[in-house]
Length: 355
Image 1 (cartoon, helix red, strand yellow):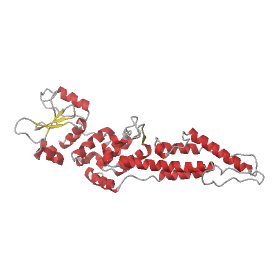
Image 2 (cartoon, rainbow, N blue to C red):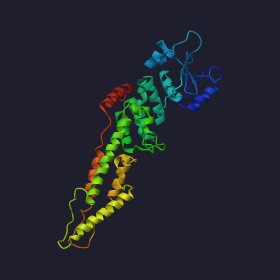
Image 3 (cartoon, one colour):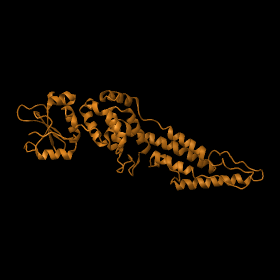
Image 4 (cartoon, rainbow, N blue to C red):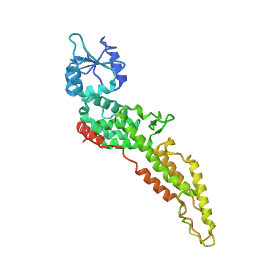
């Protein structure tokens, strides 16, 4: 009796396969159609699926060309019709096969990030994005509620399903949190610190290179006002106007105040591990990490406090002017989303039905 796929778990798939007594493939195939004529061998483990070739061809222009376009995958003159798909994820393909064979009760209402990513890799490969229409909106609505595992995966999900808001959110996240590893490669903020160049889809979208450029420019914008203030306090740059309110007999307080600001500024920089101040090209941390370090550092710059009623140093701390410039640099970072990205996302949204 044929065995039907009951969920998207590879462990369950293999259990079903091993439990089947058919001799045709290690333990027997999983049937999506009891009258199926096409045998698929999927992934490195060659998980066997029996499917209806015409259902597959109707759902996928790519499969239609493969199976009925005179290619090597076409039906042989004799023997079983077998097609090997060694690069495909068995779990993800099982989801799509359940859809095209009408087994809608087998489609999960919730999808983990990795599951949705693997599924959209295949919908892109086989031009099957439209098959996800009944579930796409719900899956994407639920995705932000799940733990972010790999930002690049979410960028791809958004790209394939046409979710422009998710695309922007995840690209912005990478802009803020990507950093450099010991080899100088741009990496994400996951525990494995995966080099972004290992994600082929980011390379194909032109995102990796753009991230590197905007990261450098933003770090420059954050470090520059800090450096200008430091040079001014050291007497090497443009002099900083004195804001001390002084009694005519206490002018030495201005120099004392300036010395205190300089000393506390250098101490705060050292405490943030930013002294000597790094060059933008040498900084390996993330934009967000640097911004938070500078914010914390700014809070540690005091002004002089004296007992005289004729002196006031409340406005001598450079904290406000410094942080205004740093905040401006942080928020003026350039978007790397281009018109070509927007156009593609709109097209995909129409396919997936989320537009």
